[in-house]
Image 1 (cartoon, helix red, strand yellow):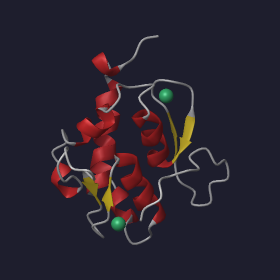
Image 2 (spheres, rainbow, N blue to C red):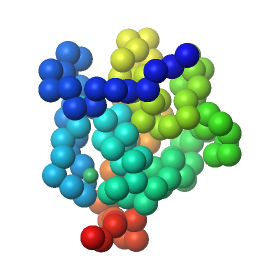
Image 3 (cartoon, rainbow, N blue to C red):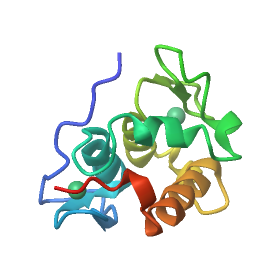
Image 4 (cartoon, rainbow, N blue to C red):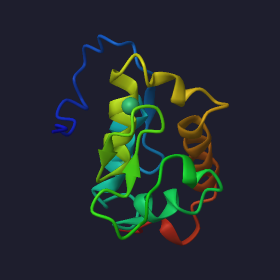
Length: 129
Ligand SMILES: [Zn+2]
Ligand SMILES: [Zn+2]
């Protein structure tokens, strides 16, 4: 049983994960999983967009099952299953044997770059208040 991330804003960052600032609001998050978890809440981007975007990356076969599955995402290394992309990143960030997937040449590194490039041109996903 996988427990979802609960401490995204824990200021002591024992793993030394990179800090990400939300692209749409002035908040900082520990690890890419923290930022994704924030974005998945649907306040800064359209609800569900983070999940559907993951399947638009050419790499999706390395971490995605099917969008309609209860657990659309899996860890390429250990095959653990996840309902949200943020859980998958949280798993990789906290699992020494799976964290290599976050490297730029690996699938989760590629997906991270995909999100970054996508949201550099926010387009219609940006919610105006
Ligand atoms: Zn935000
Ligand atoms: Zn794993």
